[in-house]
Amino acid sequence: MSKRRERSYRTHSVVLKRRDHADADRLLTVFTPNDGKIELLAKGARKTSSRKAGHLELFSHSSLLVAKSRTWDIITEATTVESFRHIRENLDNFGHAAYTCELIDCFTQADDENKELWELLLLALRWLDLNSAGHGMVRENNFGGEKEVDEENTDNQATNNQGTFDVNLLMRWFELQLLAVNGFQPEFFRCLSSGEALKEENNYLSIGEGGVYSPEFGQHREDVEVIAPDVLKILRHLQTNSWIDVYKLIIRPQTMLRIENILYRLILVVLERQLKSVDFLRKLRRMK
Image (tube, rainbow, N blue to C red; front, side):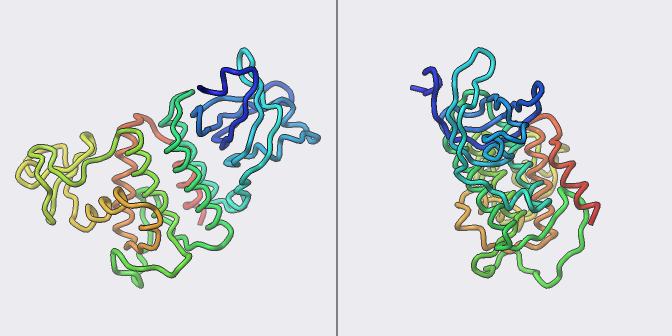
């Protein structure tokens, strides 16, 4: 039984977004392991003397004591579990964290428990914080835009140095896991028409239907695009493996851009709206 039926309850939470309320309060949208997404009121959080404010920063993982109320439940105590402060000190990874949290916000409903998503969110934030602290390797892409190709890395898949990773790879893996957990997993293994296993050849991707057709069924369709074998192979690998099993992959920038573009369009089909954090990331890259 949910603790939210009691007069007060304790919960862990990650702050997805927040906005000012009244003269000195903040209204927080948080994601929790047992109650999903909820809105909580932090009274006096904007005051310089507030003891709660430092524990309720964006992306922070905190332990809360919450009092039941008619409109919004009220945070009475807050303690930081993981501050993820390095993310807020790195503008690029701040953008990635904002994108991650916006996806969680868009794909979840209020009061809908989803512990699998909770663990997925924490994993992404922990690795972004690690990268922001200087322990990871970042190769920036541009959500379908242009970038210079690093000709030094020509293999699609290779073993990276221990302890380093590509933030964009983390984002692509996160997107695929998010789609799967929410019941929108793309079909990358079998033809949407015949159900037969796809062969290692040029196949045909349907963004609208969230899957792939074999050449026999896809080549005469107007709502499809060619998907190369190397792109499909990587998508399958990211979809079916844990982050620990994929984080050392090195993917060619051109291939990464293609994967990024495919996944973002798949997400847009599901959400039927643009994401604000993507615009923020694009602005950041134009400034470089």
